[in-house]
Length: 115
Image 1 (cartoon, rainbow, N blue to C red):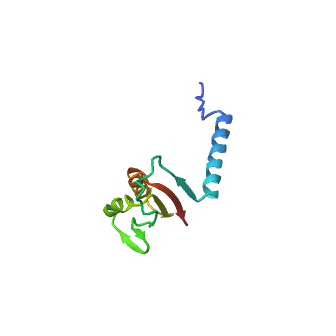
Image 2: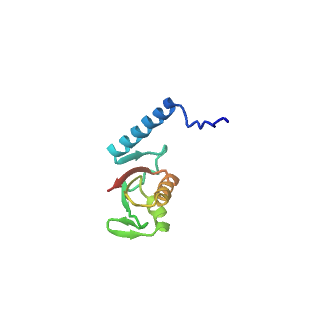
Image 3: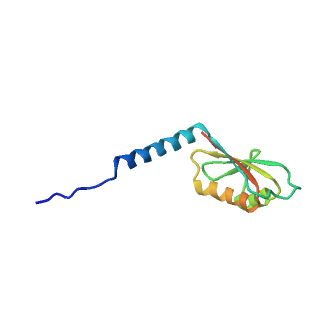
């Protein structure tokens, strides 16, 4: 009776994937912020940079005051740069929502993950 052999993958393929995995992890650990920019920045009448903090519960803070998500689009529209600080436990869908609002208004984004 023959035994079936289970092929997982070639050792070279597995080693290659592990190398990529560790390089990505080292890169994420070393740099805790990302600069994103969108071609064709917003109108020249922008108010400059906007700094907001996105908390783990989805609360958005600007200079200590809470901003509802539906107001954020209007606020971002008046700024040419968004500095977004994200709490480490934040649901990433909230982060993607804020980034899509910035993209909609062609606003450059600086993203920082807080510990």
